[in-house]
Length: 441
Image 1: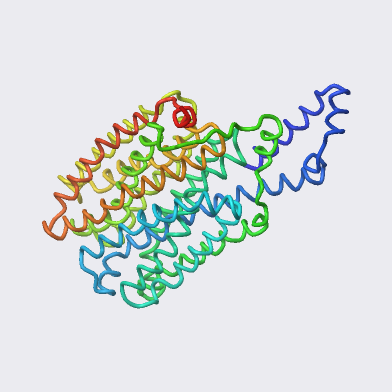
Image 2: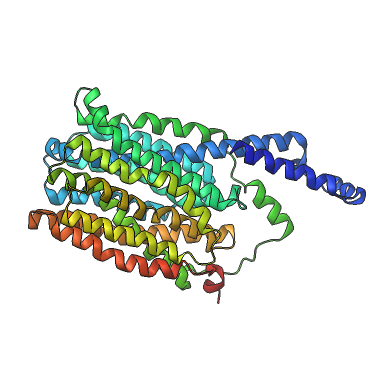
């Protein structure tokens, strides 16, 4: 990544060298403090800091959820939760993402995206640290909501930061961000149970330990908190060609709606998987530690694929074929869970891991379906907030069906059934359309 930054600086030097003397004179006369060598070094330093901040932030956007999934049975017993209340607990993440994510654009305009993400990481740290020790289900839910609030605003603003700071590398930077997110997700799923055992067997310590990594993610954003302006690339674009300011009514765009529904259905599948898949395997006779590792396998599939899929997607005029391939893997994985959950556990975990890579694909399409920075902000907030609203009933319904039926047949059938419309709307969202063109007609 540092090599990429260096090559970018080299291209800038080459461009200046290629200018005629007259052009160089005009550029010097019209220069601003942004073009001075010292400011150029500061800008390069800030860009590298943004890369570090993106990676560390992405690492912390899922451990609050997958660490809980690995210890859900222990948390239920410790807090006296029923299956329905546990289903409500697994529905809290999308609810918080929908409610708080919609506030992200307004907060970013007022305080700057870096400041909002910094505050989000601080909220994650506080929520993870205090939620195991507040006592009782209401306190646990409230502290979880605090952490999820921080995740929500950071979820929405990550594509915005990528578009602002790296407009010519949306695919690769989205891939890097998605890869770090998948790594954090799988790491929490895999090591939470062993960490809990090493810390004395207390599920409270096993959940609270993830606050340490969240605290580290606050640090890279602190020097950028006061930077409320546009990123370097945006300032250059604004000087050269101002963006049209026609009213953008995002709800008029069919592509925006298709992307929002696709985002919601893939989030439904992801949160059902993160919240319930370890329990599915445990009920089938798989040991708790192995069930956590299986969830980690599902999540870790996103590490390489989350880097590859966005890069492939940005090279295709239509992302629909990728949607269909991911959906087919999901249907195969659900069929395996239904007929032979324990016998083919590793295969089903792999297939569902591939299917869950619809998330980085959706993020990539957010950056591709909007032309301007303003459009990306609105599309990201709309698609994610609406999508997470759509995903709220899924995990809760799975918990209710599980408790009422006493088995996993009906919940798995529901998961498989939802995959079909996900493939349909994802295919529509993958068409080569621009939301600004649709929304301003």
